[in-house]
Length: 136
Image (cartoon, rainbow, N blue to C red):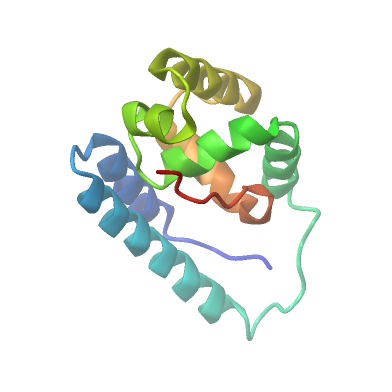
């Protein structure tokens, strides 16, 4: 589906997510982003019911996300949900440095230099991200 987003609003929200120091605030901001995307999809539906796989940005995002390892996808999902490296490491039973290395590899594979840019790419291919369950 071709959707025209108010990218400046989404980008501003993504920047706030990155800068937020409180997990609850990050979750709130991510929910706002999801709502903005849902509104854009709803508004676009009557005009274009077809999925455009020819969009170069969507193809690039899909290729990038599909090229990640399952662990990298899991960490990416948790990062996009606003979890800090320390919490991700504790949940997965790995070191914080290992999480940082996975994040760095994801950023390199995606060819992006910032978390908001990575989030924009990931939101173009949400079906490829893994769902995760919280591990005590």
